[in-house]
Image 1 (cartoon, rainbow, N blue to C red):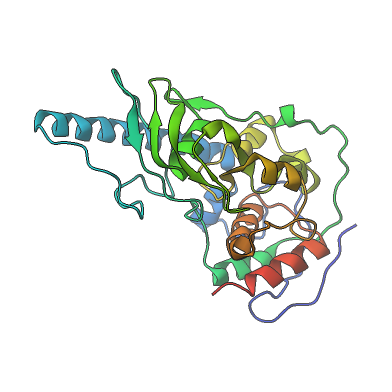
Image 2 (cartoon, one colour):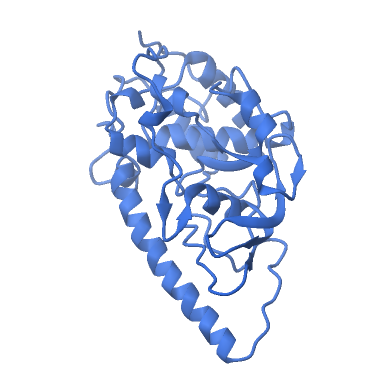
Length: 290
């Protein structure tokens, strides 16, 4: 059963409309290229792969020029300047004879994070519905941590979110510094971290992903272009489980705004529904954004 609520003001007003049956809703004009692309995660994943491959070539060429010029590698700036774009993390590359050091954008610099105003508009456009049944759900229906250019998605997120990360030839981080934005915990062992799906796989299933193709579910589970994947402490990730923002929020209150921005953006990008309580919690969090 689908429910509708009244608006929370211009910023979080709720539009009326029929619930979408697939992650490519008809309510957006076909000419809106950016939104059209967001509604086709599998196609975007392929395009993203090509972009990251080109990024790897450029990165390798730059490293070769530095080596020929006899330049010493410099430490990444603390603010992450000079690293791969947040909206296209790119391929982390490999090393042929020694580990390599990388920087990371920091946990709050997630790819595709909207402004509070844009997130308010996104929230207003989400369908409000009761959770769908979990019939047929399995994490195996969302193949995750796929590999590309020798690096798994988990490894890419650890490289992106860490500081002073050193990875071996197999791309797996062996040392570095990570800060869990959910609870503020700090780590130096990558094995102590989980990669969280901001919108959990089970929540996505209840919100419409049960009607997706396997290809679409795989793209969702490995999405590096939207603010969907985040390195966090294993404890906070397991406390969260598959709960929505009306049921669980990061213990570190300062991250509440960013969490709401990320959750809303992912639900909007994939045409997933929200419950009335979930929408209310997101609207409250967005109101705390500066």
